[in-house]
Image (cartoon, rainbow, N blue to C red):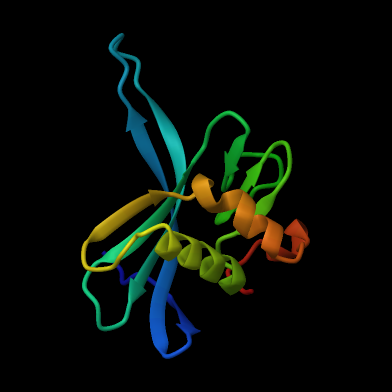
Length: 139
């Protein structure tokens, strides 16, 4: 398997590595017809610390994740009723990481947290961006 491409983020004296991925999670169905749930996952590792924090965004009612329509791109998450985050954007990553840490998430193990808990607060603090211009990993 190829090496994962990651980006760097510096906050104060701490350095972080981060990357975004899209995955499909099987949904069990007792009737035998299992479906899948789309997820965008932001993974953040603090240099010099074991473990990572995974901030995931599940698709669902009012929730659109990368490639799910309504203009979402790989790494983009939005609510149908409004709000948008580009997980390739360092400002969005910093906002989500700071929110997760303030919520009590810590490095040292593989922490997983539902990113929708932080979505509204982080999206409200970021300046708007044009979705057409944000289709790639550049910020």
